Length: 95
Image (cartoon, rainbow, N blue to C red; front, side, top):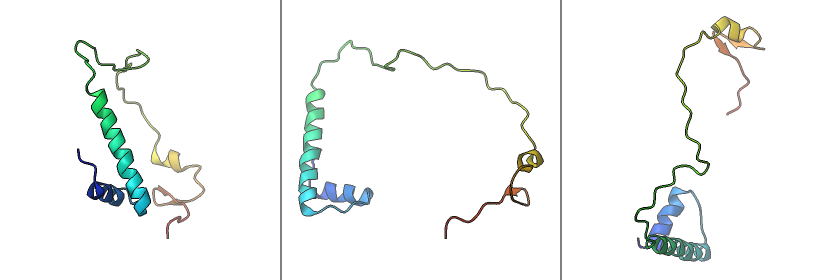
């Protein structure tokens, strides 16, 4: 992967950042360093090494999905300070 000015400009646009020329140059060097490090890591012989799926060794515990009777709309709205039709009424927060 080539880390150059075009790539950093694209990343800058995607992340909605505005970098100065100095920051952009520093970002190029940092990204090159990171990619080089992965190149070194990829040289490690992992033949016969089991993939690590969990650090704790605990597996997911699954349970059976069961349906339960919920509360009605009237019960849900019973203690609401304000209701409009069948909805909670709240103050407008976005202009």
